[in-house]
Image (cartoon, rainbow, N blue to C red):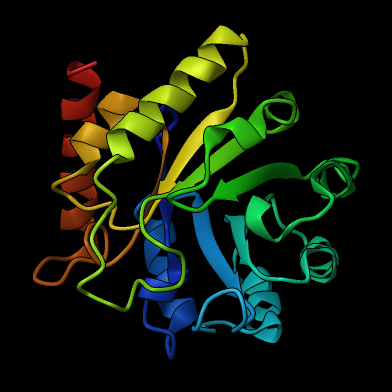
Length: 233
């Protein structure tokens, strides 16, 4: 079986029961999951706003899980500082909203927190030409961020092509940068995404939180799909 140390499972907490967050967090812990993917959305970058800062602060008090923060915000520096105060393990911000990428990367790195940038579906990998060696991870959005509630929003058709191209770039530069994928990472697509080079999966309503099965059953389906993707590499 493929160990979770090889492909990181990052359950998206916005897909949990937002009224019973503590209960769901502890259930994820009981399944051996060690990371929580937390979307911080300001209502400007994208139309939703699932979690406030105070909620994330309270979550930090009830679990030792790694907090993988995905900022979909326009005022990156403000939210970076707030996340650093809370005490998180990884901060991802969007290149599309940053005028000073190096500054924000260094702001995070100097605290010992891991740093990642996210790219919208149509954003070219060329923006990473000089930045890639400074990053712990790159998050590739496979749908337009913040529109997950639109069930008609399909995963981009060039998902595997973009993942493969980034994996090749990382290999060429001799780096250990991780590739995270986010957006309709479903039980049907995981094998192909992993085969293309993804090693961190943001799991939501089409995988770990899919209706009709328990979290434990869905987790096993995810692991089976990862094993299929690894075998196809």
